[in-house]
Length: 247
Image (cartoon, rainbow, N blue to C red; front, side):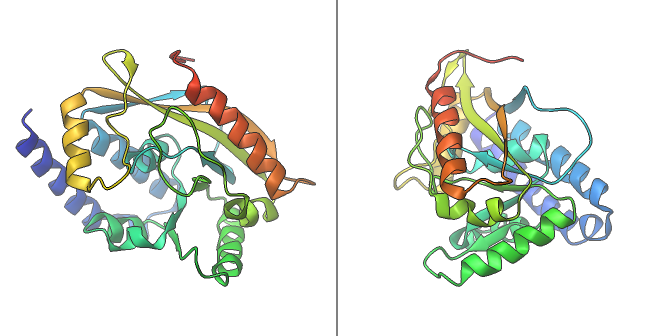
């Protein structure tokens, strides 16, 4: 498939998703919403030539947990959503992205201005409400993207509302592969724009994104620094490995 056709299909998919987000999704029951998000996310990645491989994820019914993962690409959002529909904690700038920003807002993304300390109180309230409703929250504690072969320091402050809300934190490592090897093509770093990122992913396709469950951390009687440190160490060990986990 040529890049022009792939880009057109992607735009049409985003427009369809935007329409769904203000119609079917808005009036659906919670489990139906989750199914819509999981299915739509997999279909979007498939258009890009990206297949999701979930490794070692616990089976069973949905329950309120928080996913904590390393951050490589904007595609991480859809990779995690394809396995477990999430409400992401994301920087406010993403709301301004054409199509994608509106779509993310419509499906419950939590946008925060990290320079405003008052946001911490609002974020804590929102996370509590989501967990009380049985929803999954997801956060990228690095606060930005990296090449994906290591992790940057996890910001414990981004985990404060999550840890305060209690429950479980699921630690997840994200890695990208192409032609059977680790690939940097999906990394959204530096001054790269979205079109450049799409071209890089297209050139490397077909690709596989692996979302690997590592461990559940009980936040009861725990603190944000301890949770951040443990999650960072677990994910660093996983992303530095070149092996492919097919569990």
